Length: 451
Image 1 (cartoon, rainbow, N blue to C red):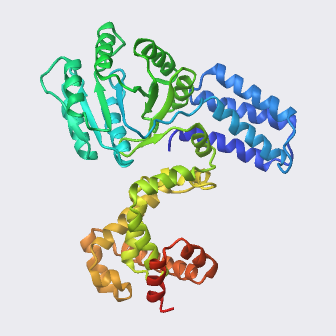
Image 2: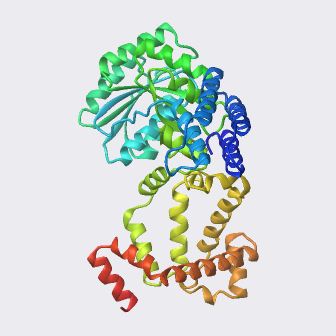
Image 3: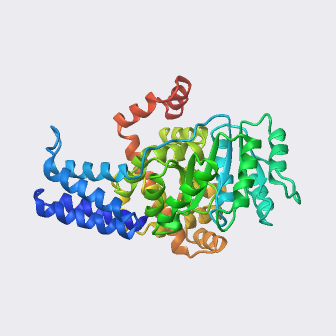
């Protein structure tokens, strides 16, 4: 999870508030010290930390809770609001026809982020093309080409050509009928004059709608000066912060950039090409505090699971059908949405429980269950009751696991089947689901259910 240490510390603050008998000055001073310590450990700027904690303390001690809100709830809302405020206002990138120019120093993750961003717009239904304009790093052309192929977007480059502006001019003509064009530019170890001149020439040719600065979260508070320097040089319009999953300095990068003129539009949350999230301060802080982020979870579900696949699984279950095939489909849908720990952080009330749960162990169990089911025959998947000792031994050998792993799967299946049966016995819930189905779906369901 992004900024896991900070999230755990802040959730401990909320637990302290929830467990207190009442809100008084001593408690408020205690929790503001805890918040101060947590933010400083996450590398958030000292001045911002002091400003935030002073505001929390002042408001918690002087403001009256609104009608219907308890003092504890009011203090939690104050903390949430102040944390959100220091991250700045959100400015989402429009899902529309545009040209985007990616800029940044060496080693910031610019080329991979170009692919991730291309995938994002491609998944939104737009025609995307990327241009390889990094003429200095030897592997940049091949890397971007491979990334583009992986995410299914068009690619343009001229291996051997050293004039980046010329490549971009030809690439823009090549992608004349493409809706989103993303240009991957060269980097340097520092913002030098020759890099500035090259970026200005590319901008003159491409006339980009967005100039996105890519920054590694590990730079911490230096993200602010870097963002300002690039902004002064080439007019940065927005920022993507990468590698937010692997550093304690991410809080510094987020808070530093948020104080510049350029808004953070995305954060990179992992190495996979799917690990790019639109940045919204309210959602981000909600997850840190263990309050969940259902909107991002639903967006992830829509992006990774086809509507037809989800509907088909629901229909089968509503008709009383639940075999290992259905269980396998459920696991496929769940794992396609990303790491279990990341998904759990988006569930209200569950995010804070991760600290006590063996999430990695659960992820491994899911993976092992799928391997076991891949070793079963279709007959066994359809009717697990026929799986006795001899079959269990054969399946375990085929899957490369122990027999107890096969028995664990069968136990989990029986528990899931009982849960589905219990759900089907709940008429109220069934009616709610049936209301969301079309008349054709409804007729098919009634026929299958023999109603």
